[in-house]
Length: 99
Image (cartoon, rainbow, N blue to C red):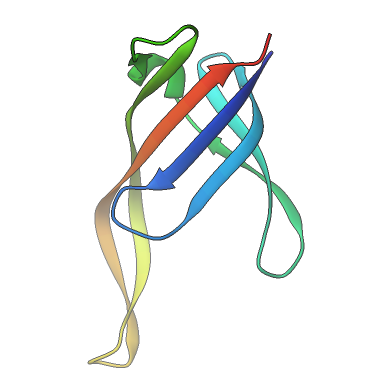
């Protein structure tokens, strides 16, 4: 497990995570606090695999896509939940090894 300074945000959204994190088995782990004040760890799978060096020493960046199946989404027009078979979420990821 290697310590990194990192930033990740949804490509088409307003959620953002940044700070100190860890790379282990190609996954990026970012400690965070929810809106309710509860701690959690955001895991972006295969971040190291999809991020390439960006020209600076020990810095990497890229776009990581997460696939989700059978996602429940609230339809406001019909006032009920509906299930989407497949949904992709893209993250803009940047990290630098902190030695």
